Length: 427
RNA sequence: GGAGAGGUGGCUGAGUGGUCGAAAGCAGCGGUUUGCUAAACCGUCGUAGGGCCCUAAAGCUCUACCGAGGGUUCGAAUCCCUCCCUCUCCGCCA
Figure 1 (cartoon, chains in turn brown, yellow):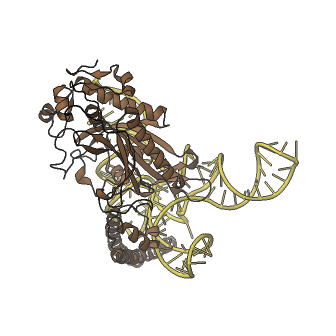
Figure 2 (figure 1 turned 30 degrees about the vertical axis):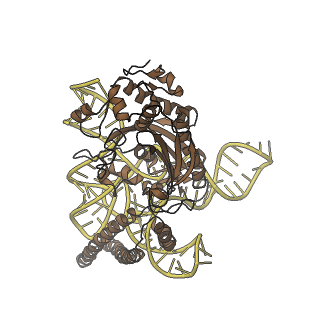
Figure 3 (figure 1 turned 45 degrees about the horizontal axis):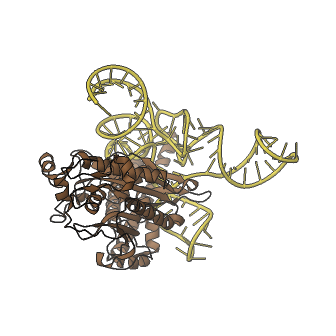
């Protein structure tokens, strides 16, 4: 979201840059709304000034014992006009606010222009997809055979797009969470936080999920509690309505949370297996930075996420999303895509974004650096990584001809085992 | 869940219908004094949105904001209602 003054002053430039991501900014609508709002505001405010002056006068006259009934009547009438104007202004404000809130972030100049995922650009590739001397199984078959992944019972207990992990499957998921958190906190300088898994609507507005994407979320009935779709929401909002000290930046936080998504509109996509779930586990990386350091920090955050894949020996590539494929709030996004034999393709496992001040303006997260007015912070986040998809990548990429799965070396201390044998036992 | 207390500027804390955007203190900032440090003294010190001005800044001015949202009133930090949050006690509970 934008602040009005900035938006007004840079209207044409913003419109041009938004056009690169396929968003048509209705400049005339803005001008009309802005003028209308200012006119109503100015009138209401001058009436209020008048009322204040009159009230003061009444106060003085009454102290002198003068009868003020007539004046009071007059001010009452002013008051009535004010409240009608006020409701007009707040209606316009609301219209304005929701219009502004529906405008996506402006892409950074380094972002390639394009209309969809086919225009994304691969910036680097790591590792080689494994060559199998046998027909590799997809994770849903492997998981069922090893009795470590149980989708039918998940459907019974809850519904489609949920999973039950058993035995080695559950342990593998837990090991991955611990592994990721340990690497990020010990090697990459992040501070671990464990936030609430439910968030309120103000937080969802702050990070940009609301008002536009309510249909993607689960909401607890009759409350203002929503299931967090990503730790980005509670963690970024930790500093909502706060002013940070510039010397304390960048702040780097990581958090494990389950994530809940309604996946409305994704019917028919990724229906097999656990690539797309209503609930999945994720370790998230979040950074708060000064404006001048956010792009350098985006590179580091992306490298921190890549490091997990490298340590696990999972082949992946990193792509920079083009203007047309970026998320609503992002100014620049790298996606990490891991190789999945069942798809015979690379699939997203992490998304690392710099939101610049877009979220910070919505959430009012500012930075004070010595003198002068506080500026908005820049916020960044990325998956480090999506645990469920990492689980899938390990199972599929490390499967053996006998149906067993080798545990990546980095993970062995966490499982105290080298492989999942063909019967699903950790050995 | 029940009973009670409370939420005021960066912090502490006055203020129960009329120049209150808000006393005082602390912190901050600018300055004076001082051989240095410390102290003392003087000044300054909230945020947001408009208008004037207009290249911009500064300046002037108006409006709003004392947890949030409504209401009463000529006029609300002060009175009423709803909600949120914090604290104390009781109950329940992992």
